[in-house]
Amino acid sequence: MTDCLFCSIVSGAIPADVVLRTDEVVAFRDINPAAPVHVLVIPVEHHATAAELGAANPVAAAAVLAAAGEVAALEGIAESGYRMVFNSGAGAGQTVFHAHVHVMGGRDLTWPPG
Ligand code: 5GP
Ligand code: ZN
Image 1 (cartoon, helix red, strand yellow):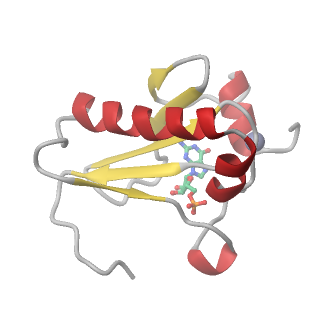
Image 2 (cartoon, helix red, strand yellow; image 1 turned 120 degrees about the horizontal axis):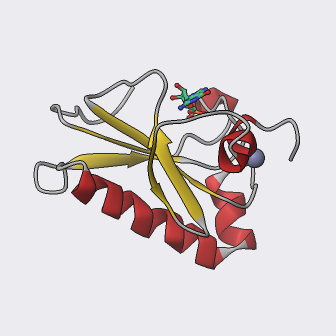
């Protein structure tokens, strides 16, 4: 999609601090981190939400989850614990409508989230 911020990161038109890239996913650091480790993992293919991604392309959805786990290991938070967050819809705080999972860790994470 031409007017999608994360499609522009996939294409390289907008730079990002990429930590992992495969044919199916790109993982990059959040520009406004809310935790010491805060990485976004997105599918290369554009889908607005995680649920739409899962319905349309389960293989890509699984690749996003697997990559999120890989990122946690690469960033050293797999053992200490981390959170995968999919905000879905504006009311839940979604601001970029290209499916993405936040991988967050490196500090104590309270439950339930706000
Ligand atoms: P959402 O609020 O949709 O769940 O998450 C969108 C995330 O994208 C936010 O945490 C925000 O900080 C991050 N973000 C927004 N614009 C950019 C950008 O241009 N580059 C990077 N790396 N992250 C961005
Ligand atoms: Zn997109």
